[in-house]
Amino acid sequence: MKKIISLAIIMFIAFSFSRDITISQTDNDYFLKYTEGDSYRILNFRRNLEDSVYTYIHYSVSFKPKALSEEVCYIDTLWDIAGKTIDIKPSSVDIGYPLEYPDIMPAYIQAFLDSEEWQAHVSLNGKALDYNIMHDVIYGDDIFSDLIDLFYLHGYFTVGVSSEKHGFVLKEELQKYGFNGDEIIPMPYMLYWHIERVKKVK
Image 1: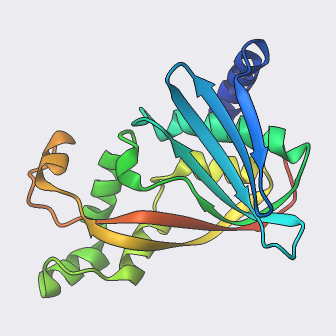
Image 2 (image 1 turned 30 degrees about the horizontal axis):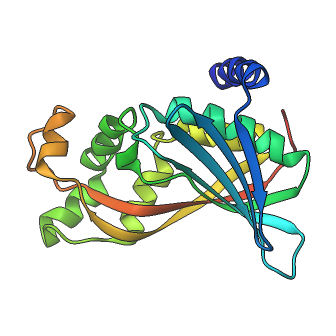
């Protein structure tokens, strides 16, 4: 947590001196766009038309991120800025899928290799999806610790994940991260974190 706080402070100072942040709004959505050269990051908050509270967060970037640990600092800062203007009480957060973040992929792959339940499923079914097991591995392991710490700093804890648009990690991707290439590792291309409010500690 200390690492996130320190990096967030550094980035907030950087934003203060060169704040290329634009804000736009529709009936349902509130967008913060941080532009840096030719690249940008967008944090989008969404609500239902009949509700004043924003309950869904989506984070996207225009480039291949280097690390989830870096991006959570931008999410943190943009979330803080938005919180000064709109009422945010998220229950679902989407920051992209695991394959987008190279720093977590070795741990992600290893978590499935270490899961007895997933390996038993693979032994019986081969390259077939089991959503419940997949969600349990993603949620139950320490793969996304930087993101989970960020939620907690904003006063939330995770209660589960859900997903859409699934596939498997390709052979070349597996080999890029030091594995044999024949491992059967599921990949959700839309991953949602479900969170609930706790006492804010930030």
